[in-house]
Image (tube, rainbow, N blue to C red; front, side, top):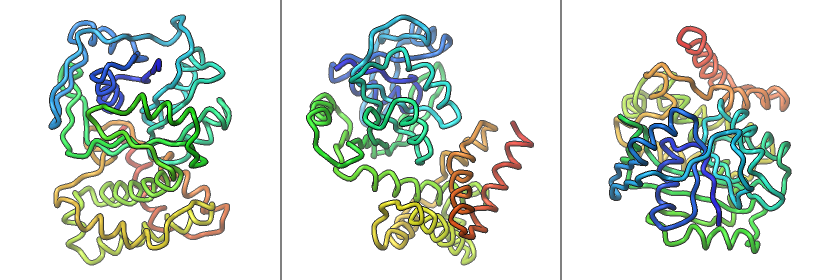
Length: 306
């Protein structure tokens, strides 16, 4: 299959590199600066699972002529989504599959509105990775999961073909029969972890140590899951307790990626994560005071820092 990876950053560069390592036909859609970087240094990946180097991977820039791809992997931040949608339009054909790896849910409505319900798959990933010097992808966690599937849960001919293309890579590419639920579960977890760590400006450990801090974790889970269930999200029974347990088991110094972005004075996904939930809370006539405080904190950060 011809695979287009939007961006060659921390996530796209890693999973695209794993597919290249296997021998798949991968092209990266990149900006001019990243293109020059890849031409000069190649695609470099430093990983706990083994380093990779590809001398000069295939790249294309927005606006260049090219044929439609079989599948397009979207791993951009939410605030780059509108631009990415415009960039990939010329490379999308009648049978092209769009596979987003963004956190959250709001992007699904945008993608299906542009490309149609049929073209958009469900997807998510679990990985700790960042870009280092010279654009090197640095991956540090034992977990490197890439989860995908039909949003209907069906094992269609096309999803099995995609599974075949992804199989045999040296990363955990997994076909899910319940990708919608897995996406909502990750949204709930990420919203809680990023919400409390950014609000308290602290790793999760010291927050857990305080009774009021742990209570804040539980309140975010309670508010967010109530909104999600109000929207008809297929959350599992007892997911809140399961996620409290997961947060209690995390490393003491664990930070969320949103918190790390704030520490670097970078853009954040405040509206994508929390603005979306609060808009839906209003429609559902639900109170969400802790989510409101988290969102206000992030918007103040944006106003003062960006």
